[in-house]
Image (cartoon, rainbow, N blue to C red; front, side):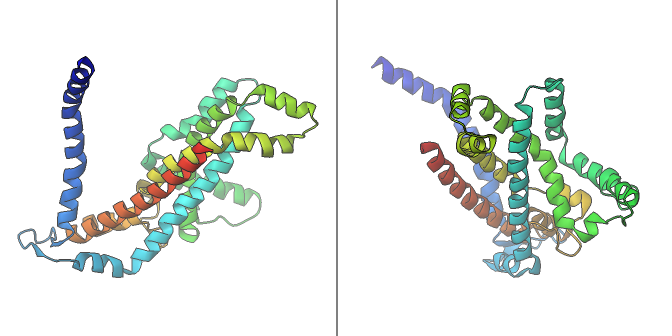
Length: 290
């Protein structure tokens, strides 16, 4: 009886937080869903009418829609590839004893704390600028012509910038997992004659499998919403070459003043994010059950 009373009291105390969380999440989503069925343009806010599925059809038939979906997947896939492979390599390096190890770790992790617009400005004006950027100076020193990265390789440039920001996160998670590897297993493998490559493939990588899946899951959720880097550097161009789904929604809402169309795009983005999240959660769950 006392246990039931305790549980009831605990649920009562948690109720306000749960209700607040539900209101915080459900109300904006419900409003977005409602607006997605309305003809609502900010240039004519007094003339709001029922549109049915027109906004979804309009957004679906937008020439940039499928391009933005493809660009979104390329950004997610490219960044994950760079951060996972690079994170494992840097984690292996940081796991070795070296002079100034603490300072090196702080320097490697520091890009994660740089705000996305600031990081994009740094790469745009100091590193990738075709006139006075660091890469342009290196090309001239080697006798090559400078490359206009954001004009010639816009999507690749975005991937590099975002990967630079998320590489420290992957490195930190993978380094933590690597340091939990049992040293006795490594010593036993060495005594059995296993080389460095064999120990990495058959011992280190399986041990890092769970950490890798966690990195992929967390990063994917955030990478689906990449926006600031595109706005600051390429503005979605040239054409639709670097336009992803969040930027397409921004352009529809704040440049086209079409709240209804942007809301429909937002609902599509939520559905896409949930599909990806469910897929990754199942993949992570299977991995963790092994």
